[in-house]
Amino acid sequence: MKKALFIGGTGTISSAITRRLSWMEDWELWLLNRGNRNDRLPENVKTLTADIRDEKAVNEVLKDLRFDVVADFIVMLPEEIERDIRLFSGRTAQYIFISSASAYQKPLSLLPITESTPLANPFWQYSRDKIACEEALTEEYRKNGFPMTIVRPSHTYSDRYLPLVLGGGWQIIQRMRAGKPIIIPGDGTTLWTLTHNTDFAKAFVGLMGNAHSVGESVHITSDESLTWNRIYQTVGEALGVEVDLRHIASDFLIACDPGLEGPLLGDKSVTVMFDNTKIKRLVPGFNATVRFDEGVRGILDAIFADSSLQFPDEEFDLWCDRVIAANEAGLAAFRNPSA
Image 1 (cartoon, helix red, strand yellow):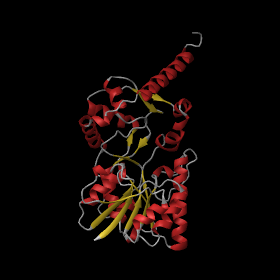
Image 2 (cartoon, one colour; image 1 turned 90 degrees about the vertical axis):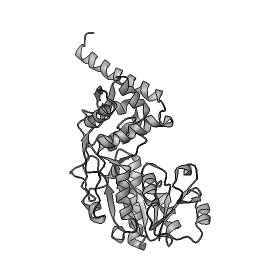
Image 3 (spheres, helix red, strand yellow; image 1 turned 30 degrees about the horizontal axis):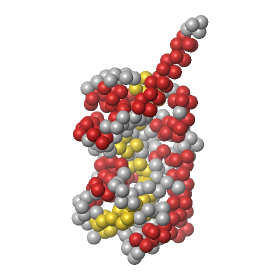
């Protein structure tokens, strides 16, 4: 039986992989985390309790354990990669780093995106940190043979939240149901790719213990591309309401909230279309099968069935109202300069 260790294992992406792996008879799954969210784990998953940031404590709980695969779902910085290299060199036959498709060139010079698309994102520090992590791993692989695999998810979602460009929780649902306007950056025709976490899990598990994937970088996404207008309209259709879309320039939104520069100019306001040839070659038979119109109904069913997911965000609601009012006031002043 093959043995895997996940660092994390309870997040949006990793929880689906954990569930899928838990019923596969040829894998024994271990999770290393702080134990705060382990109540939702399948019964046959083994746990190690430690904070990955405490290298000494992790060494103590790992002892002489060896794994076929180690996947770290929470590493963000190159110094954390260096720590993992120290911890898992000689302890694993494959180390999988979860990077991000936001690391790809912004703005893009060529579509579709392939694994050969340059990595460069001047707008988002998060993406630059992921690039630095990839560079550190690649250097360690080339110099010392560290058995790394780099995986780049794009916008991957679960049944616990709506994968939208701004917000994404109960408050957006409430605004739609109340007929309140919904902000979309730009004109809403930017193409975007959304991937259900169960589809991502299928491909990811196929990379685990796969000798052909060692030393490789690969993204995992759906082949479905939708405009942001269509994405929001699909949510509205699932709710049985007509969505009042308000298109506002990304630059204006960033002026209202500078923290949006990375998530917008460095990610969601840029058209993305992915060539998934490589993941399909590495994992024969893989294909993302959950369309967004199907996925969104599962999300809404889950949210309406679980009151813990129905938390209001009054601050976001007020921000939306203020931004829309400011945008409309600017248009009114332009149209009626003498008013």
